[in-house]
Length: 305
Image 1 (cartoon, rainbow, N blue to C red):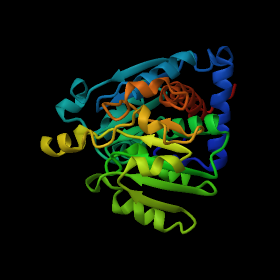
Image 2: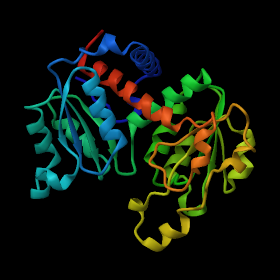
Image 3: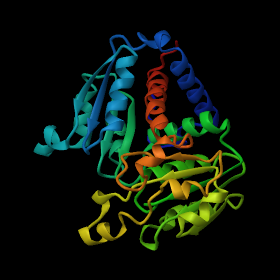
Image 4: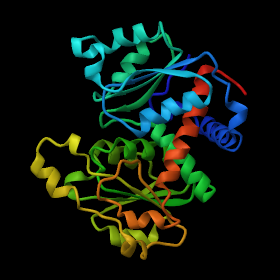
């Protein structure tokens, strides 16, 4: 039995195989429509989510399975003080696979240690978000035709952004990757991430504060929102929330083949006028997220179609 806690739980070869499977599902949905007949996915969301929770549920439904779970910790026995370990033991009696989002870093790992079914980390605090990373990788590969030899800009909340941290770690395994980190000083990449980058001397990166300076040299721009829920006071959030806004004028500085990604939800950091730009791929990400989660469910359940 396997779990998915970080993108590094999968080898590069396994990632390629998973993305190939997701592309096949995307092209031939009817072929997979009964692959999970009789199987149940438990969606255990201790923290609010729209895309990730619905994406997991839609993935299982499109595979012919069913779903159960909760969308808020207060609507579960956690409100009564039940531990994650006990919750997953109970859920293991009812479901075949579980996707867990939790506000505490490491909670899905604890669940995996006590679980009788595969557990997928659907986001744990500011730590990891591996299925978003799988979604990002699939979108980059399908848009650019490769996952190597690229310069990737990451903009916004790089301190608390779990999607950023997961994606960096995943991309470190590909050849000729370089990064430009674009953020205010208060939201710079944390030390443990720059130390990890420094342990890979072949990886080049730089930190800048102006988005305009970075745009002309990028193959991929990964925008993030400033996350209100990660701030301890309202004043800091209000001061930083509109620090970067990508609009049509700024997009004129970018290359014709640069793509824009965003894990969503967005607030103000990408103007709606950018949605019409063919380089905007963030809604493609949403669609790809369902297909990659369908492929992941099949992999972890050991189902071959």
